[in-house]
Image 1: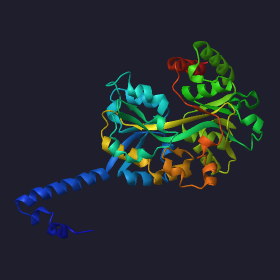
Image 2 (image 1 turned 120 degrees about the horizontal axis):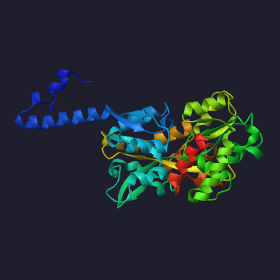
Image 3 (image 1 turned 30 degrees about the vertical axis):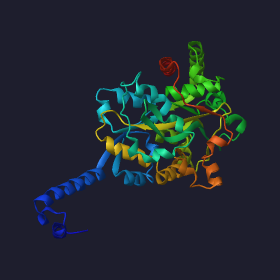
Length: 370
């Protein structure tokens, strides 16, 4: 690294220049200062912490030249509440949440009503390599892009296969409503995901189109089944500990919970429900008055890099939405890590926005308070 004296003798230092050189030198110093600020940027992000595991964080932060400060994440509903709260639009730099759940709210009812800024796609060149499965979730309006899918995944039942060895019982959402395992079941405290799971379990082919009568029937069903439930989890670590401790045998779960449990020696598996596994993308979007939107753009672009995507997959089993990531694995690894989810013949159902979301939320509050 050059010393101060060496720096002073370089042609770009004001001490070595005339009047014209002073202007050029000032511009150079300004550029250097801008780079320093970029490298020292901090991006406040509301996002699932599991999307940025410790082993992958240095890759992303190095590429983005910014430190990512994780704000508490509970659910898609909570993310929208944070965005819409007084001052929420200027409090955070970046948010990542379930695309189809947040889409309508962040866009607003018409052009000009968006709660988030239009993204500068020139700052996100990696978005040009999205998976075909993820491209529909690149959300645009009037030629402008507002949400970019970053992570693709699926939810199912996570269970201890040493306690539940029979595939005939485990390959269905009904394992979460089975009286045989009363007191050994955990639900997730989230209206969207749990009512999706419950509706598939009782046979609805299109849960998001449930009528008020359907919702009422499902509410009665889940109130009846609630007595079987040991607890409802809200945090990743809390959920992992429920199975690791033996407190529960099965729960509504996220795929990276498998890795966390297996590292503890638990024979954890996820099921492939015959009714359909719930698939989703989570997209990045930037609040309209984000304090550091430029750094947030860099973080989004880094999320879509091959290097970060590869680490994301190996550390969490979540899928990067970059088409270039899968090619970094052998066919055998792609199958083991479920990178071939779209082609392996598994029934899927997207976590879409319900037609009667207000009634879903009301139903969930009724279920919880029963």
